[in-house]
Image (cartoon, rainbow, N blue to C red):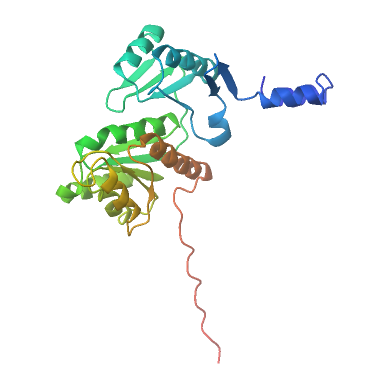
Length: 272
């Protein structure tokens, strides 16, 4: 039963208001045991997919929560998947309808239904090869939210000449937003933001060591950027991908592709 069914039932006098109120309150989530209330309506409500964070969950709980998601939403996205979780998921769902991304440590399970396509385009850039896992998590999330994704990896500031030709190729795909993942000093998002005319999301990565290691220097550098950036938490690939996809999908819905400045009004000669 969805909201339209409930409203129709009230209109036809088949359901009283008190019952309808209880039904509406129960829309959009399914309780599993006494440990989870699966938000199956989140994508419809907020535009962001519900994801199952496997970290700190028992493998059997991840499996059962994924079953609920696939039953209600046709697809389930699982992040931070360990080897033990992956083994349990493969045993429960097989491999035909299970997509494992080893770099991102994500699993997508589906009933054969492909992810919807929205027309949104998200670019994903990594400074170094070590930053790819966080970038890949962002890419998978954006893809599950309906976006085409374009990846450009290992173009960091230590060899900035690598960035320019790849950025030109990326701009031809007209992305609505770009995620830039960088560890160590975290400079790349600032540079990219100064070269493109679309929103850039800085994704600090916990690569690097010594003073400012673990992504702290990268995070602070992005927060202090002189370019205009949105910045997510360290290693928050899910958040970066979701935020970029929300922007790209809104642009796709608007159908404008890019914001253009209004033309200057034509000056008319002054009559004396």
